[in-house]
Image (cartoon, rainbow, N blue to C red; front, side, top):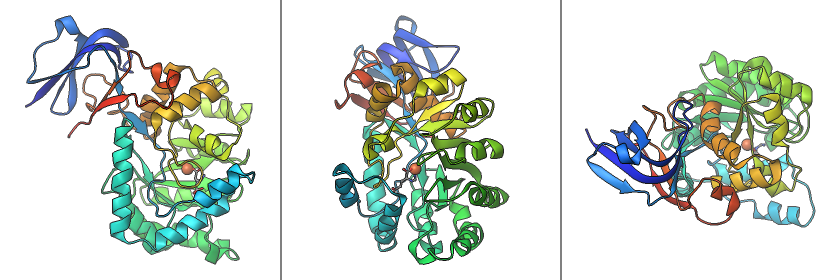
Length: 381
Ligand code: NIG
Ligand code: FE
């Protein structure tokens, strides 16, 4: 048994309703789990001691939506876009070509670099989707490699219809729900579909998610990024864990979401990078919807690995309060992954702890662009 005391915490955000946010606090973790939280003057001793020097301490960020498994970049798409073109889903095929041609070693090396960057930004739990293989071999390979880095792996064979199936999309859907799913399933926990214009219809998405459920995969969806195209309604109908993007969503759909167990995961990096209109988070909170924030890290629409940056945009442009944004990026992400062990620092939680270089978590929104992640403690289970 080994215990560590983190003391001299100026502000401790626990996200635990029975503990709340404490000042002049301390926290002890034992064998990778939080074992004591309270006032620093009452803290028992422990084997090791970390001095937070009066800083704010928060739970590690939970990034519930990334497309980290890819090769190449889409700089040319980005340059065209900032010169005036609009984001289109067809660019995904460019990344598919680069990814199919990449070796396991190159993909693993890329993933290692991304994960190092995630950690340096305070992300201690992250999901990784496939979706840049779009053939049986490459989708399986991406998930096998992603699984070396996280248990939260998601099969996204239904990202777009690849070029070679452009004139027979039905055959592609059958492949995704048949041989591709069979091959990918051992490496995936989740199944996702890009349900939107330019990708898959709600009927196609339903068929694919249900096929995944039959193989024991849990559902999540991309919905309402490109338009109000029925993804949110489908997510509620299927009871999936999360529907992600929600850029264009009606009041009626918000009401349905609020009455469901489905989390709305907002991805401000995508609106930022594609110069799209942001959804207004106040509508989601007023309706009583559970909200998460994630990076959507991908080379096309959000080449952003920084949760602090996502929080800053969410506050500036989506009208989250700083507290709502930090909670959405921690506890919200955990809910979106149906995890109860992360996203908070209650007793028994995984000791994934971020010490900020700031006296309060509001600084994450107040000082965008500064490196405010001072120390990241990741539990070794
Ligand atoms: O979440 N929306 C679908 N997938 C990604 C974009 C992928 C890409 O453009 O490469 C997203 O924004
Ligand atoms: Fe995405």
